[in-house]
Length: 354
Image (cartoon, rainbow, N blue to C red; front, side, top):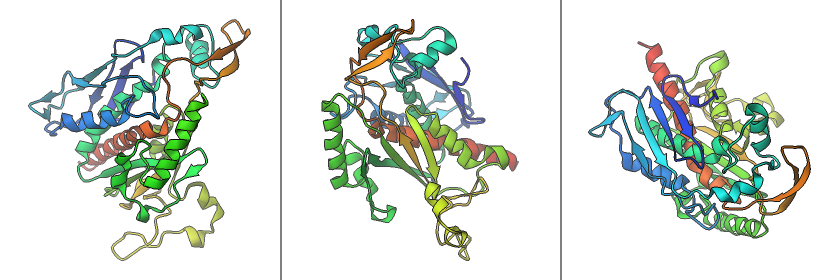
């Protein structure tokens, strides 16, 4: 199974399944001598951890990361950083009823069709549990990029949208509510809505917005390796993601060039930032901002019509512990993937100027 690695210089390879003994990863290309605060890594993991509130899956995983190599006396050695996160609270029996049944809009069918075998316990390799490994690597990438600030937050849940501009938001509010929305009133509405959806045995989608501040200029490569293209790939690789837009995004299609152009200030910054901090696929030093769209979780606590591996029509209903809405726990994952992209291009840029 290829496709388990991300990055060119700062490279992450992940392994493991949702209901296996552990998940883990190898980070290659981290420069030697980087001071790594493992407490900060664990804090980022805790933000993604299941069971942290009433509106997420109640799977009780400590998600404690154990580093196996590449760090000595608090600093990276330049060798591969290996780590594991042991699975401690699997309930594989919750999935025995779908052993030969395909959940609608899930990876069950496509994995079976591609490989001829599938780990039905929690989705196996297709489970979002794999994203914990990305959070570990992304946290280390953030520590490499000390001046760059990554901030993601929930901007919508279903039809409920955060309507305030960046200038009106208080990012310190993000971690003060379980939805991770930087507006207390909107967060409360979203939380109540998710609880209602959960009580109905249903799920709902939403969007996560991310802003990258204090960006270096000149990151990104022409043509096929544009910075926004790699950010798009990073976000679209996250489970349940259905869309990515940066800068003015689709709203820009409704504007004229005279409205859309970002005119320069004398210090080479721009008066507006509809470009989203990227022009020609290369960062211009302005804030990078983008939206990531997440679909509703495929596993429902409602009865659904589907088929089994023999092609027979059957009825199935989800069991166990599932997120009614993934966006609150997706916030640290979005930050982590953004950090991996920027760290990789940062190191590529250093190499290209030697």
